[in-house]
Length: 253
Length: 234
Image 1 (tube, helix red, strand yellow):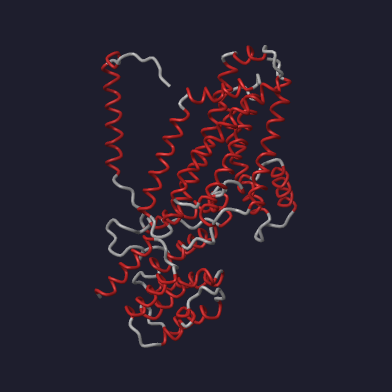
Image 2 (spheres, one colour):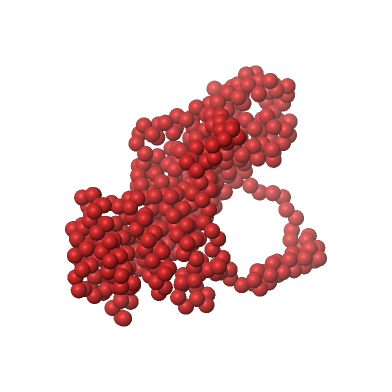
């Protein structure tokens, strides 16, 4: 399968770029933070460790995968390697999906590695649900980073757009709750703002429902809830991949 | 992940010196500032529930617990003989309220209110903390009754306010429905009315909580045992 070469290249670049050392360092920092927090907590020490270390590992995994994808793709474009690869007898969608599959594998690998230490403080079922959700989240972030790295002209805007989309997706639920709260004003401007926020939410994934640290504290979600979360992440990742392929198809070189 | 490098001796002395001077200046500057300590007056007003939720970026459970560690640091340590007694309790309960709102299943804010903030030797502040516990108990009685039980003991033995203690004890009986609420907690009012010393009452309550499995955290159990020992030494 010729497209698999792009998958292999993505994994090879991550290994040679020292991504696995970065992941190991993050794990060490996470475990050290957990040990430190245990000294400070007056009660619920395990819950504090699980929640805070999980939050740190989640955001670190997202940053690592986004930076890796954007840097890798931008380097490929800036060094004109992309032009060379476009000359291969392989359709553009296959090339795009080959790269995406590589980054997806990388995300899944990171999710497994980052979920394992949480077994110190949370039951297996909860950690499995958290890890699966993190894998879905990293696939989505990889899709977003690939899309922005391919479609924007340089590294910083691509990274900023990926981070912006991610943070907005994680806070849009809270924004909607604020807008529809009982203390909110009732007027035309408020109604308009609320509708705009609702409209923005329609084109964003509900990341505030994914990879929740309270699963680690109070038990894994039921299978249906988890399937809904994973489904929503994969649907959005598919949307980003389709948008990326569309843009890649129109690219002149 | 290797790169070609020139040997260290290729770095000119002036660059070495400027690096060393900059590092020394940084360390000296930070050492001169001393350890940061949060005084009571530094506690800012609590942000609203919506602002806290927005700031959590989808991690309310983590922010709720980190917020408790942040709150614990105010008016504690340094030259402070009695921790927390200078805190603005209106602001404090605002923070506890907000953090509990982020993760309503967490017991940390109620634990801190009952075992730390309500036990300050200042009646007005203690009453604010007890009132917070009572209000929060009414939101989820079956989960939060242990804190109101402790509040009832504090009301009787520290504030010497028997009507308040009876009100709290009666509330436990009236509002709890869960089968795992022990009999002694439901009969707290009788327990309050008995002519029992604080040490004896605390022993019964702590023993009951440990036996019922309500206290599982080692740090919490250790703190409660320390409190018992303090009572015994009095």
